[in-house]
Length: 184
Image (cartoon, rainbow, N blue to C red; front, side, top):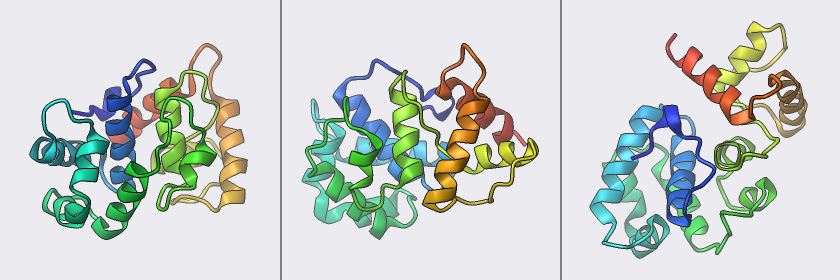
């Protein structure tokens, strides 16, 4: 099961990367702890022995909206479409960039970047979720409450990256902020 407080892991297998990316797709707009449990329930229901998350989802493509809804994942029709495109994309999760991920319907800048910063040590991108945006506002930086437009996203991403303390990865700083703000 995905632990949102310890999601950073730079040495994951392809199967683990698949599960993490599915988590990032499903968590968009939802609470991480709830989606973590929902995804765990869904995969336990459909995954067969030695089957990767993508293989299980692909085998259950037609049932995805029903399975997502049943397990409490909102926007289930849209997310089912995203997952269908994702599991059929043949994307290399060990080497893809955010541009590759964003070609898939429903994967935007925030989702692609969250996946990358928590699975690649050298990722120099930022997942501008509500916690990061609030952190920026608390530090006197004009930022919206929701995901910004592309142009504004790229501006705020650079501002945030400049605030990452020396000696910390983007993921470490991101999780530090998430843990601090999610407790409020």
